[in-house]
Length: 279
Image 1: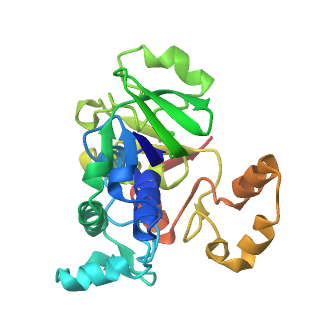
Image 2: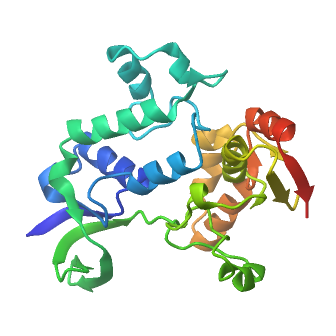
Image 3: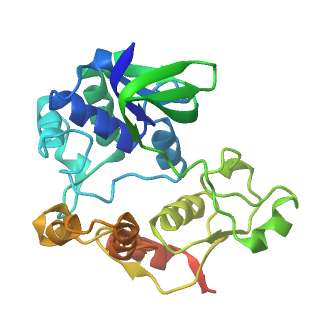
């Protein structure tokens, strides 16, 4: 069988792409495959956001996996969720309602039929089709392929961490499968100055009061979002679409991101409850 579309990755991006294709009648669930090593969608997202203690998303209520920007709001009304599930001026959704909406969308679109559990080991071109090799020996053929790969399996450790990692097993990357907050021996240092570090430090400070230090290279970079909202529409997209060179596009994207930043509410919580060191 030749599929119309194969999406490699069943996380936030992969599921969003699959929902877009089905909702816009580009493909039926039977002619679509989503290949992911887990049994269900959004496993890494769910695990990591729970690990760091995220309560509300950074993005506003119009950002979610569905095509209609007001889908999440309609979902909340139809299922009688409380207004408190949306935080602040931008109505940032709680992690709970965001996850419920995401799983509901997946089921409503019949994307369970499209799910293929496995790990992609290779992609080859054969005439007009793509051949996707999966770890269990399967080979799937498709007209189109989308790579929606996560960086969570490509953890970055600075050089200075190499000599420390094997000592007492007390150094972890936050997205490491082996990271276990309950097994930490205080005092504890969190290295990083962005929103993930802030979430982690706030959660750990509740578990180990007065024994958590946040170490960062720069002053807090306080930004409501991780990029200027102008990127959502023609304000910046118009000029960006004119760029043909993909390396140049990537540089534009890198410069547009507010890297290592956090919204104001986490800044005030962090500033008031943590010891901080600027390295």
